[in-house]
Length: 194
Image 1: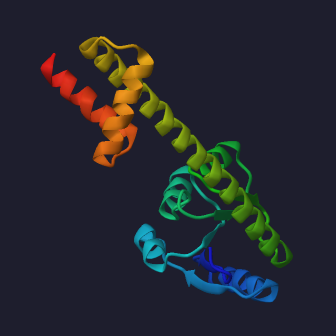
Image 2: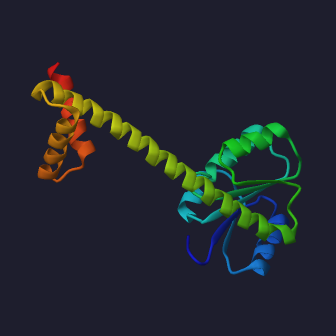
Image 3: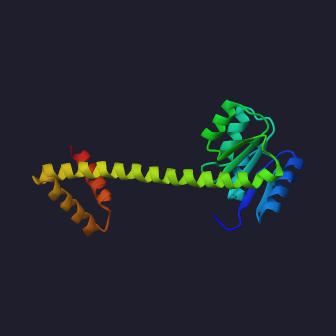
């Protein structure tokens, strides 16, 4: 993220939008935009490409909450949601949609900045976890493909596992590719021939 955070406030009520905007301006140097119309919100958020989205909903229904949460792009950026009433299902819906901070009755000027900071910190933590999980899954998949490729080589060339890996590794070096890429090509080709 940049030094100066860009924040989009999604707020239909002008007075509440001004309250949030003023709270942020007092708390720091932010680039702030207010979106008062939620029609086609996903496209508006995408066009503005903010670092953080703050959504204020007085009385959300499950459908509206889910729509706003998804439209705000909670997997791409921190999203903090302010609601007026507590409901276990609504809270769960917002969190499952990826909302970083779900705040009931929390729209008070002195709380906006700390909640924004918490939403950013939580988003960054979950983002790191998602990246690590994706990296681990990819490594496991590549390992399976390499093991299958070694099996193909062992059977075809009558060599042991270490020799099969050495052959695979040399082929990768000769082709300027990763071992996993060469292994995938070999497994695919072997699948066509069997």
